[in-house]
Length: 90
Image (cartoon, rainbow, N blue to C red):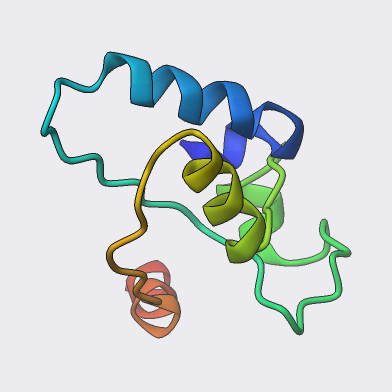
């Protein structure tokens, strides 16, 4: 869902999640992120056209910065890039 929030709204997104989370609660944020070596140019791939049209993919660091500024502590980051590609092919 975060892909549809966009970079300019990440602060509001994480602030709302932080405010709504019960004390001691756990928040799992699963999203597609741009890698450091990605070009930032989108629109040509199958995924961009048919799976994630009209989305804004933001670098992992940017997303984590917004989350931590709102009070979240990042406890684990895991990349499932290869598995996601296999899922799409299947």
